Amino acid sequence: MSRPTAPLILGLGVWAMSGSAAELRWDFDAPSEVHGPTNLSGAKLSDGRVRGLSRWDPFFYLRLPEAGIDAAEYRALQVRLYSSAPADLLDIYYKTAAGYWCLGGSLPVKAGWGVYTVDLLANRWRETDFPEARKWGGPDGRVISFRLDPGNEAARWIVVDWVRLTDEALPTTFEPSPALTDVEVTVVAPERVTAGNAVDVSLTLAFPQPAAGREVTAQARLQTEGELIAFEERRLAAAAGTQQLTFRLPTLPFVSAEAKVFAGVQETLGPDQTDRPRAVVRIAAEPGPATDFPECVVRPLGGSPAVFVDGRTVPLFCFGGDNPLLELDGSQPPRHAEMAAAGVPIMSDWFGTSGDGHLGHVAEGRYDYSAFDLYFARMAQAAPNALFLPHVYVTPPAWWTLAHPEEMVRFADGTTGYQSFASERWREEIGDDLVRLIRHLRSQPYADRLIGLIICSGYTAEWQTWGVWQDHFTDFSEPGLRAWRAWLTRRYASDEGLQAAWGQPDVALATAVPASAEARQSAAHLMLRDPQAEAQTIDTLTFINELDAEAILHFAR
Image (cartoon, rainbow, N blue to C red; front, side):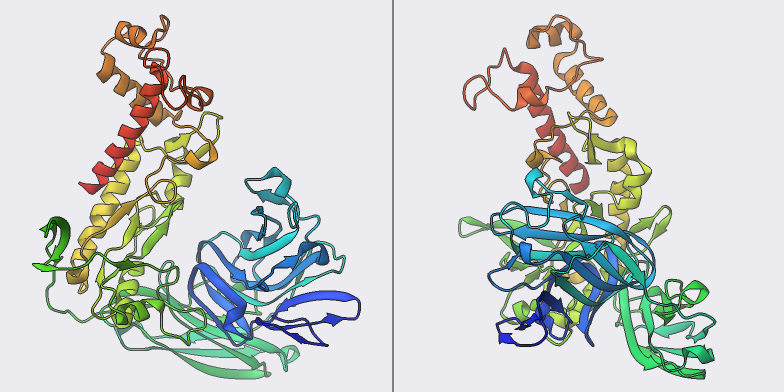
């Protein structure tokens, strides 16, 4: 991270003023320039670039000086970015010293290389808890956290070459890098390899004469539906005629997968762009000894509950990290290895996110468990003696949510969230996915190290009702109303019983609705409710709590 010329050395990089222009620049020369990469499989900083395979909603943070920056000094952001496929928006996130934050974007992400320029003063700032923060820097202007979100769409190869903030008054524009045409690409890869052996990918490039001398980036990557197995990139000068490259892409022991080979030249668009697979390789693991889940029980020990795994006590001391598989620059051992070496016995990482669960059902009728197999294979190397207690989200995957909007929770203000906890379809279909996943895990060589699964959903993955921290009140969806009215029928049996309990002569079991947002936000006696005057509100809250517990029990059983 630097400002060119007249340097003043600080802890994070080189800063300076160039003429009258203020500039803050990240050239990705050091791993410290970036932190917190999220939803970027294989995220890595090397060769002056940040790169990775996107999951849904990828992002990473750019390191700022310890005191933050004055937003008033910078009017525009520029990013040189490559995406193998289009995406919705290049979003920018900031947080200030006073706690204000906002996210927003104005430019769609295009396929290929290009420079994105965003006028920060005119940017479409939209997502925030503070209406007054919908402007660059918020009310106080002291930015202490700065993040790039290069589009939400998953399964894209993303490369960021550099980022700069400047005080120049620049309009919001996208300038594509000139794309090469008429480049012939031939890819040869084996049809099958044994797990643990490398996949040798031969890439033959034939450049036309006008491309001679231009610097290009050739790449080959091996991936499953959404998980990166291995990749290699090389920058080279194009030469007229034919150039041949060989990439050796490693695989992991005991991980079987049907992997796709993506290879080509990033500067080429059209039929040769690198977002389509060139070959499919079957990675086959040699059969190993039969394994099964260990016996894991909780029973008293010295007057307190203790965990026993196959008869021996194991302290329930766990570690989970944001990026368990690779450190950003690839040069340091994972934190998991450090924790394992320090004696932490259990690794407890996450599969999926609060809004996009991952149980291996990657699309309608398609299942892919390679994310789990790759994780356990890599962790077996990083922490060879560790046990595992992973978190798995039973929130539906994003494709399911889009396919079934009628199953989403509806709040009192008419807006919607993620799945209704009352949705029978969610419970049945995602429950089936969980059973399938458990069967797969049980059949794998790492099964004897899995002591359990932490099943999670809801706000912050703690089974809190959706919207609870945003003053959004549930559940007015069709699944929610059906469950609510069935609950009232079991409780009161008749319209007359409901009318007497609520003191409302016109209410009926078939049409009763939950208490309003206003009723739930107040109580007759400080935090205590009047069981006669507020019976509808008490019933609403009791129903929601029981519904939450029923959902947890459904998946746990």
